[in-house]
Length: 506
Ligand SMILES: [Zn+2]
Image 1 (tube, rainbow, N blue to C red):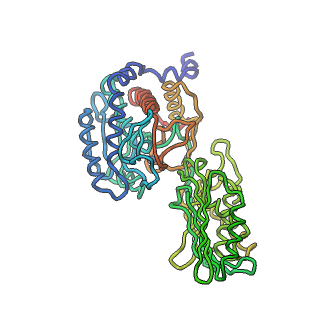
Image 2 (cartoon, rainbow, N blue to C red):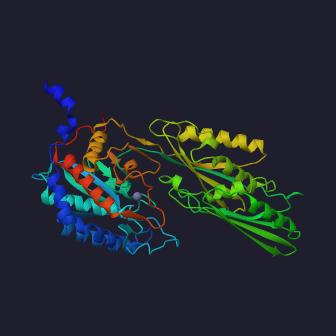
Image 3 (cartoon, protein in one colour):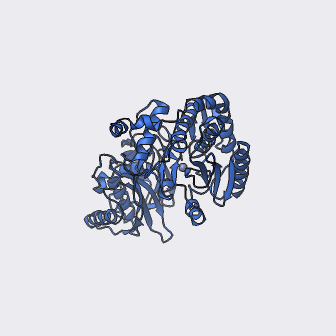
């Protein structure tokens, strides 16, 4: 009977530690500190290479953590902030909370200064507001709430703040050379309710040196072609310059045809025709919208694919036309249909394809780069072999030659949605928010791929596009507080109750 009971109502047994008073304590005493602290930390422009900003932020964090009553340890590329277990510390398990203190670079398209920590219309704006400085402050305040008004802790709670997640991404690997990982870690750098799958990151590159050969009906060459910033960003700008050696008439006609063509929704095109020697040049610039290629692919508007479609049938044979034709094929949709990647998984869905960059090479050739976020259905060598076949058939059909390259070394990270930990986290989230959301699959990778026994948990709420890596990065203040309440519920459950045994098993 007892056995039966415990099978039937495990969620009630889990919630043995009521977190109500801690939530109240946070709302009354600590919540007012959240926005000012987040604004302060956004003011350190911790982009890759800014050593001073990093050193200053570290000193600031150290002082703050000590002021909050935590133990702080500088572990090189990672900083540890501990709220120790109650009573004898030896032997107590460690529950890790992972965030990163560095941020993505910024461009000049922001409507506010990106490092000012602006508060406007119920939101905090600035680089890092969501990714990942918001979660850093949320974690510190949730820990403080537990320290001041929580029950006895069976685990030590350790906040780990990394330093190069957005660039070289060596911090956790280096940390593990000299430090033991926490027994269990939550990575606060993705989405709620919990991320049960992180897709594998791949890059496909096609390079060509085939020159463009003008024809009688298309008497122009490709003088320049460039699109995109980086492999993980949807390209928001694509530019081509066509040159004709004889008069302006052919390019004037071409311009008229192109102006009359429909353009992909959300994109704009600008044309400029200029005399050049005895001939002329036509520059076509397509503007789209940048977005995170893994987490918010649907939010972007791909300028490179739009340019490729605009120029369909208008370029003479050559490498530029070959690569743009491949961009059209790969960009049929965002899920790889054009590349024959049509498999779908009930939990993971489809893979995600970003036609990312097209750039000139130092040898005078051109290189196209695609970013493919793959599911467990097809990744690694199987994905590479499939794409080699697709590229080879495509090249043969149009007498093109490509050199095939890229990166296919990543693997998807998968968790059992029925595992004890996932079920506990889902229950904690539901208790704190009153919401029941489906476990998430992420196109992006987090520290969970580098830290043993780690899973991504929050802090972005589902139903709105993730603003990290975008211009005017911003977070609603209400969501920041809501996220702290989820953390309070979770820390009370996992760090104050009976430590979870074999958390990744059902
Ligand atoms: Zn991040």
